[in-house]
Amino acid sequence: MPATPSQTQPQAASDQTAPPQPLTEMLAAILDQVVADWVRALGLRVLEARPGEVVLSLPVAPALVHGGGVLCGQAMMAAADTAMVLAVASQLGSFQAMTTVQLSTSFLRPVAGGRDQPAAPQAAKVIARVLRLGKSLVFGEIEVLDSAGRLAAHSTTTYALL
Image (cartoon, rainbow, N blue to C red; front, side, top):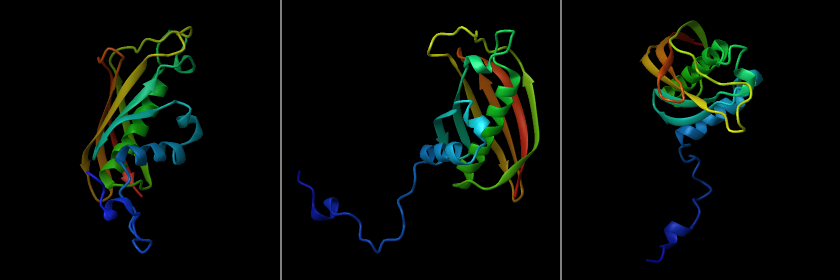
């Protein structure tokens, strides 16, 4: 069926409203433009997103593996903190300045990753959920899963919206 003229013509220049940006694109832009350079170096990637919940991939890269042959806890905590910032932004519909008030992490099992990994390293999955979004505080939880889908770390967190 041929397209009607209204389907093929661009929107009128007087239309000042931009189409809504897909959530994953908005979150990827936050990762690219807002987070610190060293956090970008973690290689986090948005896998899934819906309002109040974000799933990221954290590559188990050799630079993030300590001498014991496992993903270091600092990388998991930074990924958890970043994932929650994105989950909050997904709930709000855009990035808003915030700061971490509390981040408590329990490490339940190691995430394996040798320094001599193949070119395509395994990845951990980081799942962040907003539990409650208030006027000035946000409460959330984050799970880090190993490549087999087993819970490796669990975090609870509180953020202050600025």
